[in-house]
Amino acid sequence: MRQLAEPSTRRKAFEQMVTAYSEQIYWQVRRIVLSHDDADDVVQNVLLKAWTHLDTFHGESRLTTWLYRIALNESLDFMRKQKTRATVSADGDGAATGSIAATLMADHYFDGDETMAQLQEAIAGLPETQRTVFNLRYFDEMKYSDISQLLGTSEGALKASYHIAVKKISAFFKRHD
Image 1: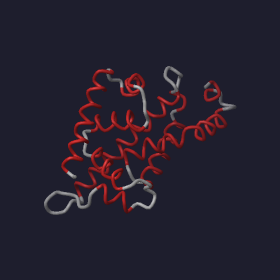
Image 2: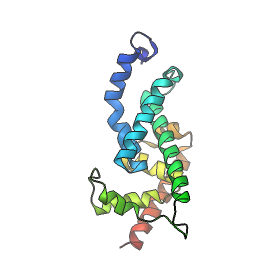
Image 3: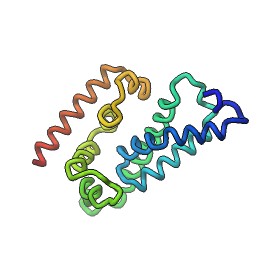
Image 4: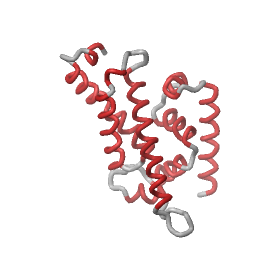
């Protein structure tokens, strides 16, 4: 988008970009951070970072790939910070209280059923790479080639991560049946 590079049209082009992609970014972030309020905060950080680093986008990749990369990094940073906070505030035996499924069901912005809440809990239990690949492939229906470009990983490794994630999620549901 040449308009993003031109100082005279940058603001208008950025506003159009926000309008065009903010919902997609929100849902990508929401699947990682789970909470509506947290997702809103992270999306604001993503858009702020995109605006302040607009001059680093040179068009080598698609604009959506660049935005997804920022959103993914911001989401993962947020989750790492949350994990650190949860560790610090965990109860005496080192385990945080409450399940992700129960938290989601109590969130009035969550519009899924109990099965979707359990799926999100299963996904949250995956290692970071498997969780990321699963979310991008399953929910965003991204092609492996696009995920490969986004994550800088081979398609074969991504397919393996996705396959392992699916097996772990299946095992989660078998244990909780």
